[in-house]
Image: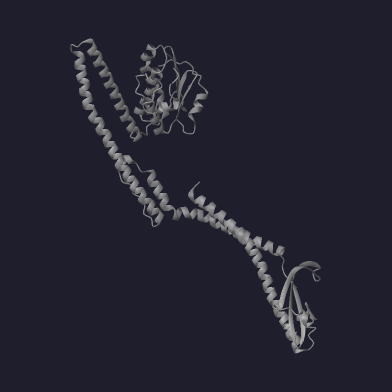
Amino acid sequence: MKLTNKFTLWYFAIMLVVLLIGGAIVYYEIQWKISKVEVVRHQRLNDLIAQQIRTGGDFSGSPTRKRAAIDEIPAGNMPKGANSYYTRGVGWNPEFQANEYRLVVTSFYAINGKYYRITTYSYIPSFYQLLPGVVDSFKWILLVLLVLVAISSKLIPKYILSPLSRTLKVIQYFDLKQRKPIRLPETRTSEFKELNIFLKKMTDKALEDYQSLKEFAENASHELQTPTAIIRGKLELLMESDIQDDQAILIAEMHNALEKLSRIHSSLTLLTKLENKEYVTEIPVCLSELTRETLVSFDELIQMKSLTLKCHIEDNVYIHLHSSLADLLLTNLVSNAIRHNIPGGTIRVSLTKTGLVIANSGLTPQVPVTELFERFKKGDPASDSIGIGLAIVRQICELMNFNIIYEYAASQHTIAISFQPSIPASKLLQNLSFPLYPVL
């Protein structure tokens, strides 16, 4: 949900609560005001009647006496303090022949040595008569509020939040490999200014760190190649010279260790390039042909271990992946399936437009399969593998937003890769019946 929509919903919810509370307040305030105004009018009417009594004369036909009752009372019945009070309640209205809300005001006067109680009344709107009008008014207010909220939800992103939208677009297109400082849009909003300052500092620092890391990786890679090549050359010279058997064994072990060091160095350098996203391509690669070529290149190793290969490869499977990464992905997966297989075992390969599945027989891994995608993790610690192959595979999948899963069940190691983010890799494992096809 967008930020403006959240603000709009919160604002509307708050205004709805305020309207409900305000409606109740207005409802009772109007009723109280009507009663108050009527009380003042009746007090003035009572004063006018008292003035008529004071001046004398016959006022029985005066309009002021229509709803008035005048009683002469003993002096002892005169109230102390306030000389007027009012009551409200339901009373019978003979004019409309119905019960209505009646307001009665009673005042006391001392006139020419006599004491009078003057009572006047009128019918005012009741609570229930006022309620529909109040509800209708607030319905219109709510409707107007809805229209204004809808309009503001369109205008706020366009004008008020436009600097934030432009900043987000700049961040989305920011690329460390371009080595250019980020340029954020100008704004007069204090909060957006603080955000831009923070983003500017963060991206500048990221550029510096990226450049330092890239230079270190390049320098380390270059500087290690020379001594490694010299050591390899010296060892080869020693192996060709007249040496004893025990010395040859030691030199061979040193040479193997050096080769392993070279492989680790190459793999770590490759992982660094993958993490820095230096492999970008817009040209799709035909994975069908590349898979067939990879399997053909490993045919001798497959035959040496007496493995049975079963594969189902669809034609014209294209994915957006750098050709070098696609070759590396397949090479690591196939070599992993051969290396960790058992003599006389099986390898099954399935390639569709949805994904790739490679399964092989093998021993139970000694570590959880979820850890085999980490660097230097091996299912068999005694293996001569350096334990980086699957880490490279996972890094390639993360770079291309592929889903990958590793499962082990019934002496079968299975790796599934889904090329479509919307389809989990586990769905590819639901049907693993591979017909046997010759590898061409």
